Length: 473
Image 1 (cartoon, rainbow, N blue to C red):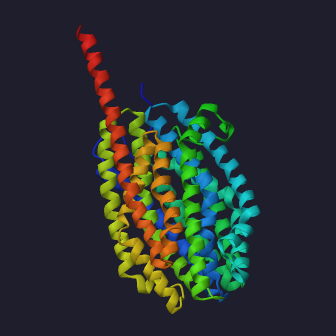
Image 2 (cartoon, rainbow, N blue to C red):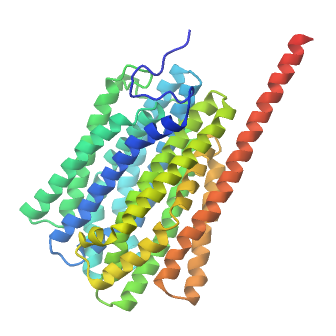
Image 3 (cartoon, rainbow, N blue to C red):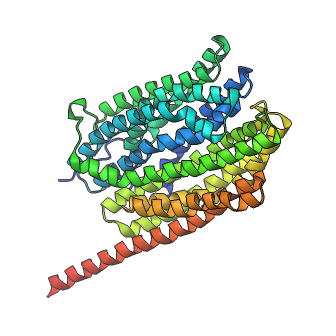
């Protein structure tokens, strides 16, 4: 007797029926959720700018690469949670699914505490190494130290969201994160405008909002009636579940960390150009931070389809539906391409009113517009790169995905900065490294994912033919 995993209407059946509409329905709540999160993050910078503290916006922007470097440790393992839980659902194995759910949350807590302590210890020296100086360094350090105090809750929140996604429910995280994100904005305004705080108030609001998200997501999963239900009495580390989470999540974590390292190198180069162009000021840093903040809307929109590709591929891989995975790929590439073109187009068309929200000077606006034109025009290449990576992870080839991404993007960018930028020390040359690396990596991801999927399908068909021949003999 088969267990019914899809007991709630919010959960999408990834194993049967047409796929294009289901991929869109899965991704849409994620797009909205992630865009709301970026909107709230943008509000952090905008409200910090209202404090009239010089360099507040730029100081937050300089912390992004360093924070992501550390956060990607547990973010990678949360990808492993998504893959393993979804795969076990596809296999129709409720016991293994439950073990993965409960083990992953302990892994999340452990990695979150570790990353929080690490971030506190290294934030100031790393920020100084990147080129932060004077009051910018002080503001950035204050922001990161408060932020890292809340990292254990950020980690748990991400693992809980990964579990919801693995079982096909992206609506529940949307509702919860929308509410806590609004709470974040209100606390931003209170701490900055009422209490007279600056980047410290923005960071504190982020921490408190993530505490609320973790509690609400956890309580909701405890009330779930399916096999992913959270039972605090069952919280323990299952050796096999942890092994699979690490196997599928560690490469993603390493990839994310090394991506952040390459971005830190680029951030350091931007800071160097800023110090050369406007010594003692932060115009280039501010413009770069504002543009990066707006680009976040495009990234999270396309990353939502990456999450869909991981979940859909993992479930169908667990169910050995290799032919169906080709349809998953087609649907995900189509949806992510349309989303990338639409969101990037909107950002480029409305760049002036959007950038005006950040209270930038003329040089800062020029910097922001330069970055947006170079990065957003070919943004669909990043979208394709993400989907290809997600399919490979869903096929159990997380290490392959990581190796391709590291060579095609990280190594390429480092070589670019060390060679081309040394010859032409211009900001547009720095930014150009991104779309070139996206294109190279996207093509390689597609070739590998289709080759591996096809190999699985041919092997399965050969086994079926052999069984049929044996039965007729």
